[in-house]
Image (cartoon, rainbow, N blue to C red):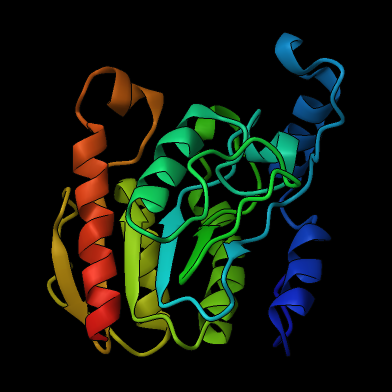
Length: 231
């Protein structure tokens, strides 16, 4: 399903949440929502594609890989209800982008100021690994999202997949960097009118091993805050 040109973020959200283009992803996300994790057995899982979330006037766009199977695929909001979200929203709160440091459910009162959180792939993929075809099928949604978020000038890419996806989004808008810049934590690249920042993904694999620490993540968003003030 390729998105039609949306007149608003609300229209785009409807297109995203109704998408059933990728059979493997549809089957997986719905199977997870039915089987559930024991800790959430009494909850009703979202089990659909997860749209972006945040401030429509955002100057910062945060780009992740995909919804987590028992996080956003359960709650229906990006980085909500899992440990990666705990790290991300705490960093956003500490740097002035979020009104609170935690994200548990869609109705928990979380609001973003000047930031929007999204993902390249909108459905939770098996083993957190979407295929190239699934990525390419979903990219037009993120591209349309960036078009509608017309004030965005800074992007933070979480992990190598987010970095590659962000570069693809910017290239689709006519801004290309050659040779392709290599992903790294706190790498900063100018791409047309945008600044792209890299950050290790706040996955448990990275946080448990201390490849990513809270000060490291906070530093990326402190830099993003400074850049949005300059833009």
